[in-house]
Length: 210
Image (tube, rainbow, N blue to C red; front, side, top):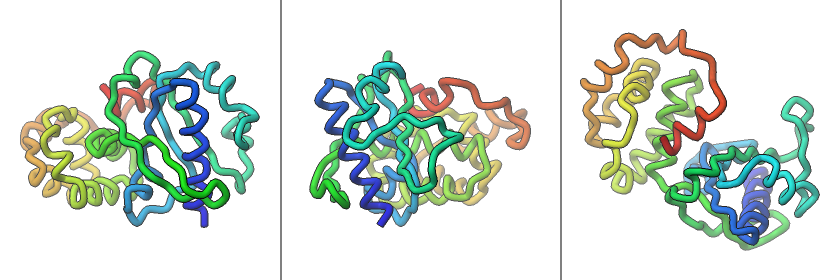
């Protein structure tokens, strides 16, 4: 199963980066699947307190990792995308979860806590049209809402408003989590979700930690 192969990659990431003293957290669809969500993913996204050059030095040729340009990635390989945020990732909240890999067996890896997973997904839902973003938010809210709700005042109201513009079904979710939905709609009223600025370097990091 691809989930077991993804688990292998996550376990290997944890081994290499933790041994080097690098703090990191996995986010996105794979993280939701690892927490029990009915979610299929073909890759792993993580954010770490390490520079790109240092990450390549640590990972390339180790435990099966090899650096390949995104445009040339063979379809049978598991992709692990590492976003660098050296200044702030070390202060972020992560949890270590147990995993079962296809070849590595029982192991562990590091995942962002439910609120930061939710926060990153709010940005994704605000800035692109992919249905699984809405589904991921609803799963997080229904299964981990108790852990998310105390922190929702930290959500960017513009992102919340844009997410509701794309997926009206999310409005009830935000209300249930204590978000001021009317204020979010007001904050985003002059933004066209179909005509947003092009993604910029650092947007993913800002969505998770900003």
